[in-house]
Image (cartoon, rainbow, N blue to C red; front, top):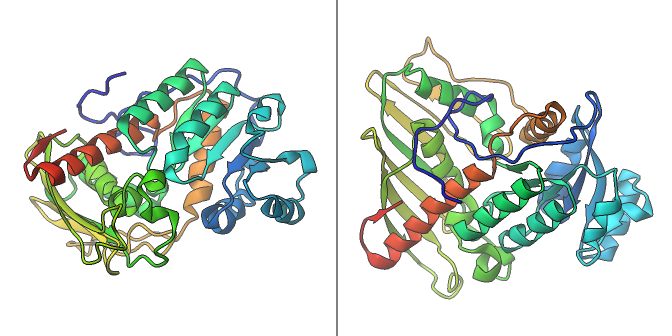
Length: 362
């Protein structure tokens, strides 16, 4: 499977995003709430996703999958799940016989996304996968192929694409409200804590700050540009080679796009404060800060008559219901697995540039 470099196509969320999507067959009846199974019951599932499923209109929590029996008991009691709705990683494949599960939401360390996507597709379930999609572009392609072969949809959890401030910023870019874009600055990072956590293990995370939070800055540049970057040059720095022995701590990179637009990005596990983007057009500029978190988005523009301000929303509710609606309506979903693959192609070029010390084509 080959992903070509090309301008993004117009999508339902107002972004210019290209698509390679699996067909959705046997769509459940309209009005039905689709059953979601959460695979991995860490902090994201506990604090964000499960509470969001209590507010969704087209989605509901149907089952959980965990490697910790005690967590299974806690979730059963909290969410009123039957005993047979708690699966382990070992007996996960039995979901093939569970008609209450329509969608499998993979909320696991990055290295496990590939395996559980393939297993879910074999079980005939639609797949929603957290970002980054996988640890390599090769794995992304295999995940896309598996879902296509099963005629099931594969969506990637780029929740910012459903957040009103981001969507309006995309509209600014597409409609050239501030003139054609010339440059984007974007960054996201934080001072990471526990040195024993899985995010600092390359076998589980695939990389460090770039894979975890740098992908947000990369996404912002790509969906604002509305086209794929041609080349990248990157630099990595480390202040703690022991803590970050296996993964990157801080990376800066620059990209050039076919239109001539340029972008500078930063991601880090070393310090707090970067959570923003600024976009510069020929007639003005706009941006966001804070930008990528679960809440608190704030936008700005150079023209007080054109605000970038919206009420706060639950991003997880929006993206999960959008995925369920796509399945119910038999329509392709964006952002699909192809979008996840495009990010990995750029990420791999960034790592190649760090290794070579040269500009790398994407």
